[in-house]
Image 1 (cartoon, rainbow, N blue to C red):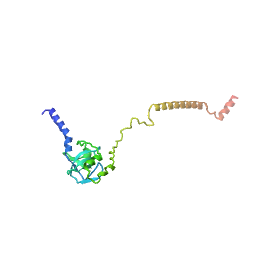
Image 2: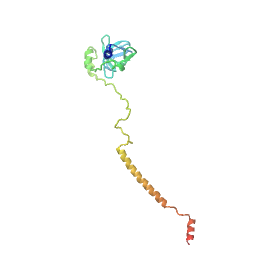
Image 3: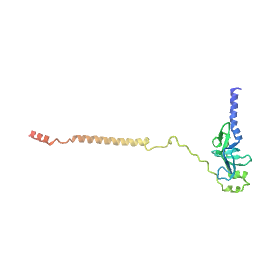
Image 4: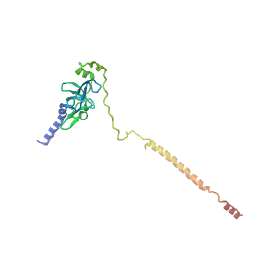
Length: 205
C-alpha cells in the first residue's frame, strides 16, 4: 500500500469517527432526570438509573442539555453532565466532549416538540404558558491587556506634551526670577560692625 493510499484511508476513517460516536449510546453515570424541555423547570418525565444507554439526538448551544431517546422510545431532555461516552478508555462527559463526538447543535421549540411527543400528557396544554429558557451565560475571560482606546490620566499624548511644555516654560521663568533674587540678595551685604565704623570715622578725621 502506498503512502498516499494510506493517508487517504486514515483521512476517511477520521471523518467517520463523529458518525460512529453519535451512533453509540451515551451512558448515564448517575441517576438522571429526563425533563420535557432543556431545563429543570420543565415537567419531569422519568428518573433513569446509572448505566442506562441513551441515544443523543442533539444538544442545544453550550452542550448543557441534550435531546435523548431512552431504550423504550421515551423522548426528553437530560443534563449532559450526567452523560458520558465510552471510547477506548475512561468515560468522556458529553458536556465537555460533545463537539468532538460530532453531536449536532439543535434548537428547542416547545410547541413543535410537545406536539410531536407529549399530546397525551395532562400538562400538554400548558405549553402556551412556557417561555424559552435564556441561553447559557457566557463569561468572557479577563483581557490580557487594557483595550487600545484605554488611556490613563498620565498618558504621554499630544495634549500631555503641550501641558508639559507650558509648565516647563513657567518653571524656567521661576528659575530666572530666583536667580535675580539671589543676585539682589548678594548686593545687600550687611553693614560692618560698629567698632569698624568708629575706626573708619576717626581714621578719616
